[in-house]
Image 1 (cartoon, helix red, strand yellow):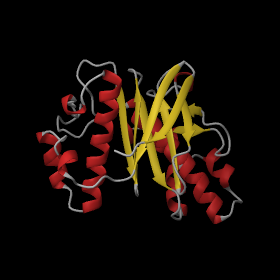
Image 2 (spheres, one colour; image 1 turned 135 degrees about the vertical axis):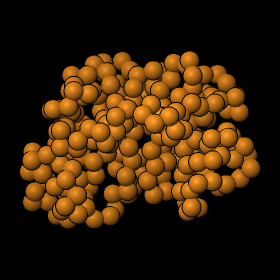
Image 3 (cartoon, helix red, strand yellow; image 1 turned 60 degrees about the vertical axis):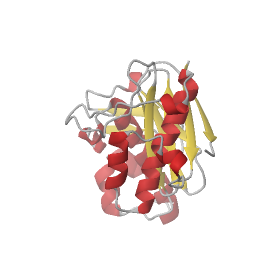
Image 4 (tube, one colour; image 1 turned 180 degrees about the vertical axis):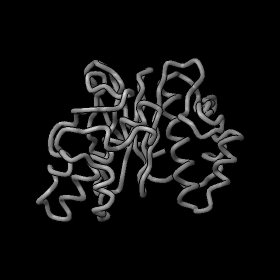
Length: 229
């Protein structure tokens, strides 16, 4: 059984005690955001991830340092890692909710989306496979939005878990019904094998949909909690 812990937080205030946890590259990324809410989401994601890493590795949070070098371009916006540590992390945010998923080395992807906005037909046709579109046909607008963001978060989660992101076409992966246990049913992309992909839809909080994915053939156990920092 592979364990995965997910922790959620609201955006933190830009207080010195939190800002002090950002290293120089992270300070640069923080400063580059123009909107205050974007700055606070980035700050919260890093503080939350470092707090989780510190707990799991037995370190002081101030001692946690991430390597976020992008494997493609070398810039510091890749998946955060603690060099040499048996730990995998994935950060996601939407609206006023920020989350981090952590495992003891199993590739993991987390996605959260606000689900109160309307899902445009063009976006659904772009993202969903024919089987998924058929599953949501006939639903009310509100039900379709909830169903769509259930599919969307599953897709984003598995793509993040592979480390390839949107290089994997959204329509190359098909999932179980939006109202069924999350499962990758079919994949035409070599990076994703249904037999080696495990998912869970998450509770998150009202007004949001979220999912976590692990690249493993083992069963998974997922826990969620909210952490005031």
